[in-house]
Image (cartoon, rainbow, N blue to C red):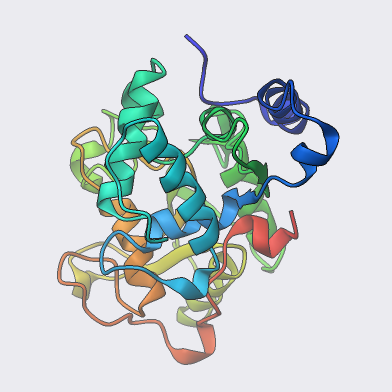
Length: 285
C-alpha cells in the first residue's frame, strides 16, 4: 500500500517525482498552464472551516474548489464552493480509502501523495505540507517533524525552555484524558510549572506566533494549569473515535473562542493575541 506520508528529508523530491508522473504525456506549455493548489492554505482551512462555515479570508477557496472538482470527477459527492467542511472531508476520506488508506491516513485531510495523485492532469501542488517523521521527540515526548520544528521556533522566542506534558500520537495511552485530541499528530500540552503568570501568557503568544492554536488551561476551566496547543494545518490531526474536536478547536481559535465544549470566549489577554497563521505561512515555506 502506498503510504500517505513522505519522509521529511525527501518530501520535495518525492512530490516532484509524483508530480512528474502525474504530468507524464502533457506538453510543457500544457503543464505550465495547470492551476495550482496551495496545500498549506487548504490544510488550514480544512481545520478552521468545519465548525461554522467557509472562511474566504484564509485564501484557500480557489484551491479548495479545484480539489472539490477533482473529487466530483472521480465520483465522490461534495459541493464545489470553496468550503472545506464536513462534506468535503467525507469525500476526501472516501477517496483516501479507495486508494487503500485507513485510520489516520484516511482522515479526510490531504496528504502530499494523495493530493498529487488527485491533481494528476488537473492541477499542480504548491506550499507542500509534510509531517515528516511521526517518531520525532521534543522534550522526551513524541511529535512529528513539523510539530518539532514549530516548537523549536516558539522556544527560540522565549528566555526559558518549553517542556511538554503530553505529546502526539499517544492513542490509546492518553485518549481518555484528552478527549482523543492527541490520538494523531499536531497536538501537544505544554507544562507551565514554575512559570509566572506573565511567562505563561508569553508562552501562549510564542506558540500562536509560529502557527499553533494555543490556550492556557486553568482550574477555572476544569484543568490543572497547562497550555493546550494544536498545530494549525497538520495533515495528521485525527481522532480514533471519528471526532473532529482538535480541528474544531482551530475553528474556535480563529473566531476568538476557547476551544472547549462550551465554545466560550478566549481567555487570552489582548497583548498576547496574534493574527491567525500556520507554520508554512509563518516560515515562508
